[in-house]
Length: 321
Image 1 (cartoon, one colour):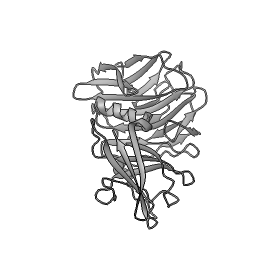
Image 2 (cartoon, one colour):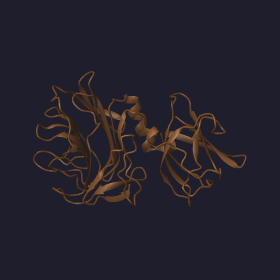
Image 3 (spheres, helix red, strand yellow):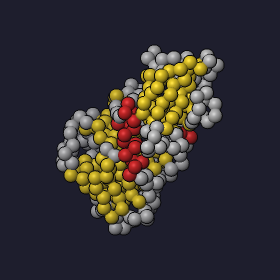
Image 4 (cartoon, one colour):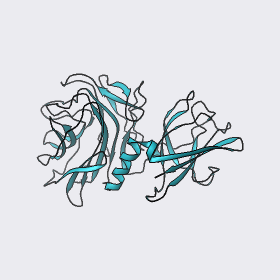
């Protein structure tokens, strides 16, 4: 769950005294969490918190405790925030100095090709490809080690923003796979289409009426149980198709904001990207909708109660759901 809050009474300059728990003293069960942003002067905070269960009909109560001057080290667990199904989690913070760190235990950090531009994005920061489509422009690559391969199930998601919708040739949001036999898993825009590649010649196309300068949340999945690939836009499935066959090998460098097609490196020009993730499981439609609701409008996904003194510390009550 993403949480964006203002915590002006935290006492550590890095926000290390901030913790999340299941009880008002934050002592019974501490939740695993990651800090994406903390600004001491304003209290602006972005956290990713692993909550065991989020109810559908009632609020799930989460307690935020802070203000303990005795705490001077990070109390969260970056890798533990993301379960073993996550193979990549890139936040691309912070809008000023880009980080390509992978938050999962795999530590498959990305590498910048040339100079992607750090910009404010959907959540904290992201990176922008602000040059024309041509080989050798600005994008991010990473190793494919540990990524779903062969006929294995997979899910990839990204926030994408385009200054220009009509882009051709294939200018990818993401892709990995072998360019030699086109056994790829990727997502790319055309003039009026968003196309999810599941292998090759098994494209899943969505006829779009997308707006320029607008953030969209895209999810692509392939489920090995039914051999179906699915494409989601802003939490809702918009297209699907059966994958007829697979080459047993699906590997090759991961590209974010580009591809490594056999005919060229295809870069998504004037695009901004944020929060790219890969899992080796296919999440439910409800899970994907919840991701979108949480990340697109956190102020309506949860409510924040009053700040309450707790001894020498402070307590904030939050309802998520």
